[in-house]
Image (cartoon, rainbow, N blue to C red; front, side, top):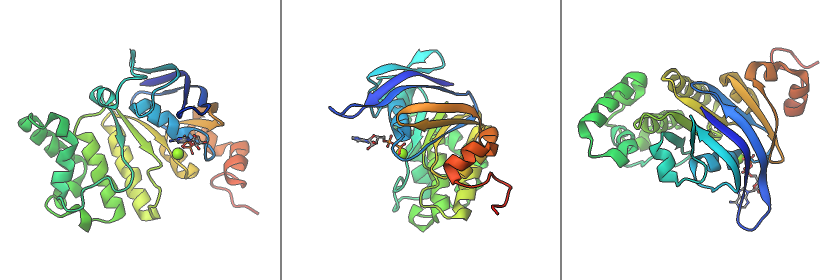
Length: 244
Ligand SMILES: Nc1ncnc2c1ncn2[C@@H]1O[C@H](COP(=O)(O)OP(=O)(O)O)[C@@H](O)[C@H]1O
Ligand SMILES: [Mg+2]
């Protein structure tokens, strides 16, 4: 699990964006951060992956401090961010794209080959389309390849920033399957999603952020069913009810 405590972070000389963020991304569960634009959701992920050095507070992976480590050091500890958009090399095959996920360990050929076989079993699409160029895939299929690539290093934690952005409903459903598969492998997932209903339906735990702070943490289904939250996010009635 990853625990954020009193996390303070910001950009350049500007003031702090995160002003004391605290929550836990529970081990082997899916946690989704929701909140309005500019709330600081992406900034939390950037601090977690090492792209942004925290100004204060702690980020503990298991019991180990990872806040302030380099992106490479954090990756080595098993925290992987799945990149969004243009994450694949279109002229390379699906297999080559997936194998690039193990680039830092590229000399462990036998281990990588075995891992690739496991991933093919998890995501049949990879085996089916192994020698096709990534450019020939649909948007949803590309996202699956990005997930497969992230899994090559056997991550403990996967970070996802707005994974459904630009996807149609069919591709979003495929993406949901990919996330569930990741999770069934025991991976801890911390995601940000602008599609609140999609994110909370997929997630076990929810974190609501606004203005660089955490407003609420709790069970994702409960949050989805909470009329106040429905009002806040959808300006409407909760899931399952028809607005009159
Ligand atoms: N690279 C950056 N440089 C300066 N300010 C930034 C940068 N990235 C984000 N911000 C600012 O930080 C705040 C939070 O951004 P972000 O974490 O991206 O919000 P969210 O993902 O919740 O929409 C916003 O006010 C945004 O303008
Ligand atoms: Mg964002």
